[in-house]
Amino acid sequence: MPEQGMVIRGGAVVTAHRVKEADIWIAGGKIVRIAKDTLPKTTATTVFEEVDASGMYLLPGFVALPTQSLYKIKDGKTYIEVMRELVRSGCTSFVDVLRPEPWMSRPQVEYQQTRHFNSPLDYAWHVAIEPAQLQPRTVAQYSELGFSSFHVTVRSPEEISTINWETLLPLHTSKQTILHLHIQNDASVKKEQRDLIRQLWLDATRYWKVRTVIADPSAAFEPKQSDPFLHIFRLNAETTDRAVRYIYQRFYDSCQVASPLQEVRIDYRRRWCSPEILLCLLVRLASTNVAKAIGLYPQKGSLTPGADADIVFLKKENWLTKYDLSTILNFSEMHLPASVMSNGKWMYRNAQFSSSIGMGRRIFDTKPNAYVI
View 1: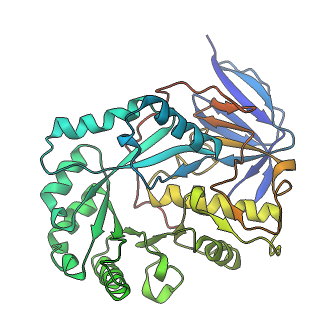
View 2 (view 1 turned 60 degrees about the vertical axis):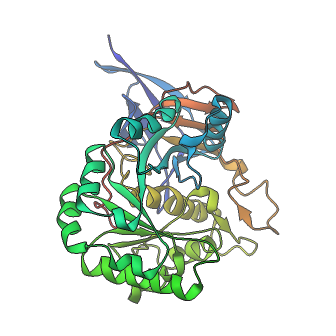
C-alpha cells in the first residue's frame, strides 16, 4: 500500500537569508523536496495529499528554551496548556534542563524525565551541574544517559579555576558535548565579578577549544573577545533588537548570537529593512541559530530536504499589518501562526489544536559541534 505523503503548494518559503516561492513535499514526517513544479501527486510508493498554502509564509518551527523547567509541572492540564502556548507562538520543539539532586540514583534521574512522555512537542534534554561536578566521570555518566549539553552555573571567579580542563577535554571531544555558562543572577554577584567570570570562561574555553553557549550577551558584539566557532551568546530581551540589526548589517557573515522567540523584542517604529527581510532575520535568530546552538540543526530550524517537516504557516496579510508600529514588537505577546505542523502532522490548524498527547519525541542525536552560526 502506498505511503501517505503531503505536498504544500503555493507558499512562500522563508529561510534565514531569503524568501522564495516553492512547494514542499513531505513523506514519512520529513521534507523530501522543495521546488516549484507540477510533479504528480501519486508515485509508485507515495500518495501525496495536496495542501493549498497560497497567501502564506512557510517558516521553520521555532525552538523554545523555557527559563523554568517544564518537567516540574505536576498538574496535567497546566502542562498541556503550557505546551499549547508554545505551539500558538510557533514553537515545534523545546529544550528542558534537568536539575538532578546529588542523592538521585540513575533510575531516579530517569524518572524525572517521564513527564515529557506526554509532550505533544519534540524535545531535547540538557543537564544542570555545578562547576565542582564538571569532572570526566560525571560527564561520562550523563553522556551514557543521552545528555550532550551541560548547564554550569558559576557564582564566583574562583569556581572556574577548580575545573580541570585538561582532563575534561578528551571526553568533551570524544562525546561531542557543549557547555552552557550561566552566571548566578542575583545581588550577591556584583558586576565586576560577572565581568571577571565571563572573561575567565572565554579565555579558558578559547584556550582549550571547548565550545560553549554563554547566557550573558555582554561580549556578543565584541569580536576581539570571542571566537566565532567556540563561543555562542544567548541573548536576553534587552539585546535582541541590537542583535537583529547587527545580523542585518552583516547579512552573510557569521554572527554567533541566538535567542528564543519569546525573548525577541524588535524596535520597528522606523522601518530600517523590508518586512520580508525582518521575517528572515527573525527565523535566523530564533529558529536556525537556536537549533545550531543546541545541536538540533539541520533536523530542526531549517526547511531543507531531510529536515523534520516542522512548519509554521503565517498569513502574509497578518505579518506586521495588525500591529501599531508606534510600539516595539514583542514576540512573547504575538501569536504568529495560522497553523503549525510538526513531523508532517498538524498540531494547530485554523485556531484549533489537533495534536495528541505523547506525539512528541525525545531527540538524542544532537550535534552541538557541527555548525558555525
